[in-house]
Image (cartoon, rainbow, N blue to C red; front, side, top):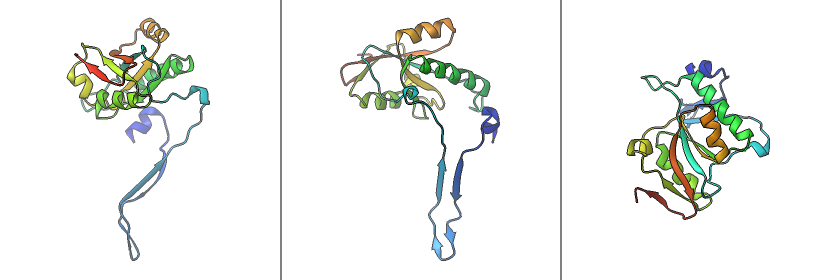
Length: 170
């Protein structure tokens, strides 16, 4: 409920059948949910890396001590990313989960059999820590300039490589 209010969005639809029984039938616990949105095809960004040489960054959302997002910051950050997508600056994108950046970049690399050279300054915690709600983006040079002009904090994860390997500290 807090997230719905914070994001200013209605709940998505769904069916919750957690009771486990219906008359003579034992129903396994089931949760079915759905959400629908529309967009132009040319504005859809998929998660697989596209081009060797592109930079890979992480944009992190602000959270409080209970790991609750600062909804105003999330809205501002996601709106900025949307603007970047509309202007062709984002080649691929992945919303992080609790498994972190290492899992995300692996999946992003598999799609087109590209690799990643991870920047030596990236820490183990930054690679494997919970990143729920953060974004990993493959961006072009125009996006780097745009982010600097907007004074947006980001973490440079590394660069997309032609080899189908992930390299970190040699």
